[in-house]
Image (cartoon, rainbow, N blue to C red; front, side):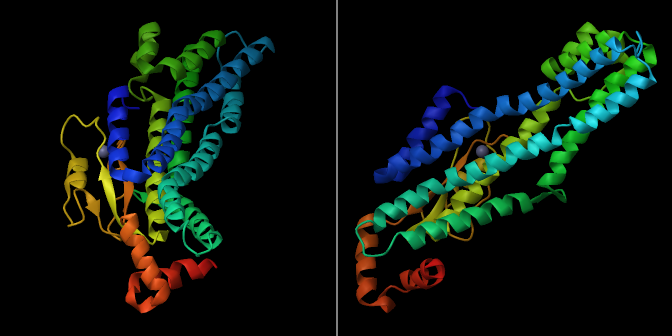
Length: 338
Ligand SMILES: [Zn+2]
């Protein structure tokens, strides 16, 4: 995550944009930040658990008399073990939960603002809650349906599973090829997932000379990057989907994270001028989060000033045709779930 001061800076920006609804903006933001802060450890734990099981299995096999040097029998047994204790299922489970939570975090602001704005009116709140709930579900589906280079999220998760199994297999195979003491091979696996290829190269230079760059430097970091990207995408999907349910939605503002040392695409998104204010995108043209891997920028919906919105709402209750956008909202969003 970004350092303390840039995180603080982003909070200040959100507060300013949300104005009287700052509390809701901060609530949504907190849910998202809490989620992201937990992910580093959660992803790492998945890799550690799997690698430690594998190392334990090697030591067990040695105790059972499989051999004092790595051999083909170890290889066959460990391949099975790797298939059962891969990281694909665990990563899928983690992402399933986190995508739901990120969508909810994203929808928090629009939901709360809308409920607040309508609190003094006669409109029943329940249909609206249902509408928000339903778009959240759809946003979750949309994240899973996204493709990147032709691959769905589930395919990309399995690619990481495959990468991990290949890296672990390389180390095991090297042990077999050189007739390594199984205890040493077990230790190499444990070290590799904890400290990466470079550390392994310091402790076992010859092995690394043989293996070269066939194994990634930090195998869990690559998966973490995927998890972060998809969580950001889910937050964005949730934010946009929920805003569209709100009758006071005006546009979507791209808020630049302060940890952008050099100008990039995010600056363009944050400075775009569509006549709705700096960086505010019209409904239907919202930019997608994240703009690049590890992008910490966020979206926040901009809503009509509550005074003017309530005046229009009041007019609409007397004469629906006088406020065609509200009538349209009532027919197509509100009544749909009533
Ligand atoms: Zn960015």
